Length: 407
Image (cartoon, rainbow, N blue to C red):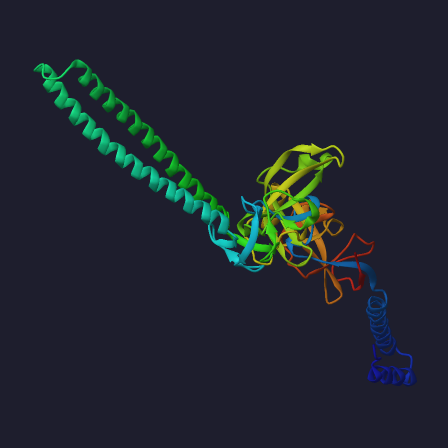
């Protein structure tokens, strides 16, 4: 602080003017003024040079900390409905009507096989059925005629105009034709069934999508042989395509059996794809497979996405965090999160030392429970506020601080 030059001049004048009582009184007042000014300068300079060095941390958003996570696991995106489509018959591929990545509907034709032989067999079955129908019609006509003859002979025999043997022969003929008619009808039913069988065989040479989905693999080309069973030599395909029902995508993870008690059906989870590390996907546990792998000592857990997205692809790597519902509810009420060492208690009240313009300010807060070394703040702070970590000796309201980067 600068000294008062006018006061010093008056002091010198008083000293040279005599040592009377009035001069001594004025000299005392000036000396007291100088002492007070010097003390104030000392205190002001001391505050500037004695800044307290402290660790400073930043209050974060509530989900930036643990967020109630009780378990982390890694797994893969899978599809509950995935099928390699093949044919029921062995044949040569004539047409392939799709490409990889195509969306298909249930029943849509994917490919056709060479069906020339089956068509010829079906034509034979149709002709056999037609022949059986004509034979049946002939027998029906002959049976009707035999029954009329029998009735006439029966009338004549009643009048003793023909012998009993003639009536017996007529009745036998009618019964024989009735039996042949039943046999012809059975043969026609067999022929009709054979036609249906050949139609079914022909349909088997048309490969259709079993359900709606996306084709992720094209496994055969025109000219190749395809069979429902594996054939030797490696020249026969066992499938034409692989279809995935994209609506059935989920996550499968293997959880160590020592921690499976932290997981329950319906539990809230969060999935993060390795391909999109900043994208947090809400999910829930759909099922815990009720068996353990004795080799790996793990239990398989299935997690369903709350909302599907086209960026989620089968076989993608994914990390899953399982949340404690109670802790999640508390975090939802929070406005910020700080390290637990920044929160202090005095007279039943919680407070932190907030840093504003490099000075300490005591702020009363409302805080939740501490978990994972962090504490949720319900009121009093906002994300981005700087607070002092710990309780350094000498800190006080308005104390000048020298922040250093904390954890």
